[in-house]
Amino acid sequence: MNSDISSKEWAQHYSDFKAWLASDLGIPDRFLQTLKEDDDWTYIIKLHALIEAALNHLLAFHFRALPLAKVFSNLDTSNKRCGKVAFVRALGLLPEDACKFISLLSEIRNFLVHDARKFVFSIDDYFCSLDKHQRKNFVMAASSGFLPATEIAGKIMEPEEIAGTYPRYAIFAASFVVVTRTHHYRKQVEHDHRIDQAMIRLGELAFQSFGHNIPQRAISNLSGNHSANI
Image (cartoon, rainbow, N blue to C red):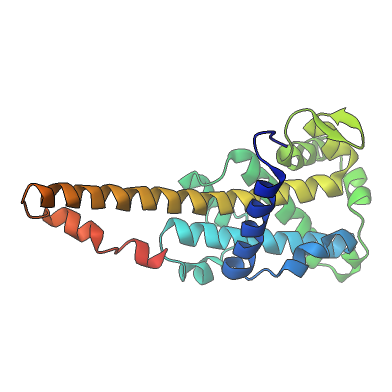
């Protein structure tokens, strides 16, 4: 934890995050609370659904039209040509490691949902069943949720070691990072928008103080056409 951020501030950030999940993504608090007790099949399905909801919101918010979230929800998640991740990559909304993880999680999710016999599923067994190349890809993608040299169970471990030793935990961490990045993107855009509006207002006051009319372009920006759909 960053020593410059107090526990109270972290609690406030997490409270804001959960409120955003509920209000904008429709994810209730219980969704997160029950993850720890979920079996591995349910765990994967729920985390993939959470990421899908986050991507729908991220793309809709980027285009300043939240109703588009319902349209994006109909897109395949990881289709490389026309899926949600393809849009996210093209727009630079998430880093490449996050996109690779989403593709990995989608692959596991699809492995589960298309065969009812996979309901009895173990993440550890799945990881062990992978060949050397597949395991390397899993570790690289699932390690994206950790900082270098993270302490786990009293031991300093590198991200790849954590992902290979605790794959279920690594999947959770990487999923959480994707969703929090979506939340951060929205907060950053809203912050920048407030600064833009403050600059416009400052310009308006400056023109008025010198007895001039506000330029037409500034009036158009002040109308809030873009902010209306945020």
